[in-house]
Image (cartoon, rainbow, N blue to C red; front, side, top):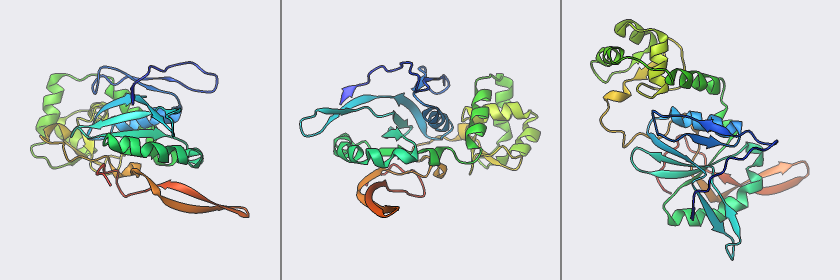
Length: 253
């Protein structure tokens, strides 16, 4: 695998840009579509994610290594575990399935699981809008006095609702959204800004080694050996599938 190549080129058919996230890493993350952008934003709110690298390397594959493939992202967890991600609209996955199958053995040699993440996993309900709002607040700042007040309101590691924290820490919602956007606080279950939503004091935890990517993404490592048969009109074709699991655990198969 060759090192990352720098790719940010303007195209009339693509939306390219940068996601700045200085509270996670000094360099911004590049994206080449709005779907990739929303994926990056989702990762920024995912507990355990410590680094996001766009187009990390080039893979040569084929009988004579005459073909090449550049993954969309390399995600690193706080445990040190890494995995390669391709972000693709669901309708295009089958078209690239054979290529994905060919690169799997190469990535396995490097101990890198490969995930295909689609729009059906990213664009769930109003989650993209909610996440974008939280990241907007994440770019603001809070004083050390407010930080200490929020921290003291969590006397234990027990979760509180958003409304409880507003009262106990005597802060406004903008402060809570800032902490959530920077993952200083995290959601106990689903991402929701309802007053009753339970949130955890992430900054009080000493070990994030076992934090896995939450179940709302619902993706798992690509499995070349699994097939499903889809009938289109009078025709039937075998299509590779990515093996769905309840959670995106990165334990190797």
